[in-house]
Amino acid sequence: IHAQVLYPNVAGFGSAGFLKLGEPELMLDCVRAYNDFLVAWASADPDRLIPVMATPFWDVEAAVTELQRCAGLGHRSVLMCSRPGAFDLPMLGERHWDPLWAAAEEAGMPISFHVGAGDVSDVLDDKAGIGLRTHFARSSALYFLENAQTIADLTFGGICHRFPKLSFVSVESGASWLPFVLEAFDWQWKNGAVGAEHPDYDLLPSEYFKRQI
Image (cartoon, rainbow, N blue to C red):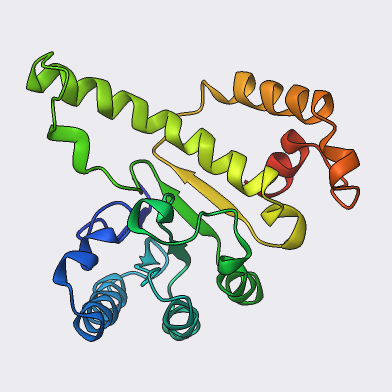
């Protein structure tokens, strides 16, 4: 192994674990402390250890400020929550997040969406009574496919179109489902007349994917 990308999963796959602290100032302090630690730890070999910043996504203004700070420290990517709506925040495709995308694009930092980067509190909640291990296996498998929804948000939501120089990463989500998903996206895009509703969208979802994801 020549190099390793260091994802800040200590607070969950999308940094939502910090929300459990309940105090905004403390939450932000912990994000900053972790990001500082990760850069210091990676300094042993910056060419092989690639730090990815945790993001205080619950506060867009703070997230932009932290992104700009971390870009200067040497972080190489931004870990983002893929299901902010699960935490009573705007959905991923809403313009609410545009300042964050703009800051990442300007800094040249890809946005990373780790598998399970939303609300995973149900992973141990076996409501159907199929067995805890069986439910865990079922939920874990479906988390891979949730990144397909994230890609839909990025393409159908116009994020790729509005920020053409911004790259996105689907992390640990597998890839065998991509041909079917992209084919379905393109077919529904054409059949649903998305181009008529959004004439400014100049590419198909699969083309946005190829360019940026």
